[in-house]
Image: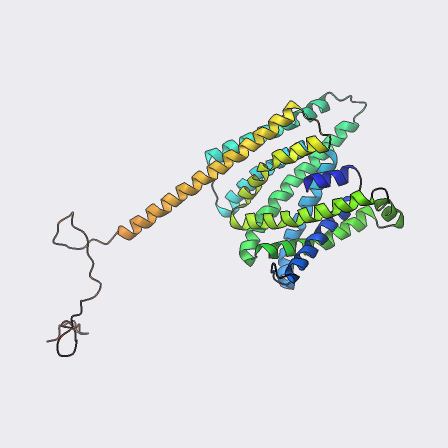
Length: 355
């Protein structure tokens, strides 16, 4: 979807808010079709739940809008690497909100992510430093792109963290999350498109011009399908794992995405870009290893705690000495008799033993 958005927005095939509205419409239509075919199921729209879920949809709109705006000014390799900075915000947001822990290996992976961002963007920074002060068009473009990227990092972290919290509260399934996110964000995107881009006849004729109509149709279809798949995968990953893991999983696909920008969209293949992408990929692998190690450690601690709890008994007097096994008699034994199977021992309320 990143490559499709970059192609549509950089080549001015379609305005931003209208393009994002098409993605939301495509996701809702696909959900409806799959439900009619009895392939999936999701809960119907509830007004009270929609009011409480609406801030998450606003966060989704902010995340997608700022990310798409940054793609208008930044190349895909720089965009994808700087996107990894969001992982640091999300990780420490989970520490504050959910009591998670950040291990030394996680910190190492975060450092690698930051270094990869610096290395990948160094060519843009150096070109900015060498730009003539009288011709600052390129510098303004880079600063604008980095500004949108910073807003995207903040909005993405807030959206993912808050969505994880609300999913647990509402007990949403994956398709419920996809349905609510896209349906509630659609009016906001349409309002943005109407206010910022206009729906005049001249604009519509320019957008759907005959020479670009085939490419625009293909781009809308591909981005709509990609939006649906990404919405489902994001909801599933956040629900089953954590917000930080969801973000780090996204880091693992940065290499093919950035490579596609270099191969198909003419982004420069500099040593800095390539090395920065590889370093970010290594950081994702380090994080994956650290999460696996942390899970194994927590599992071992849980088993050890359970074992110690089950084997601990209150001190009682035994005839076997200090090394004897502790045996606790919970109730008197019952033995059958020839007369009627009555117990030989029976307790009375006054504490005496019956004859």
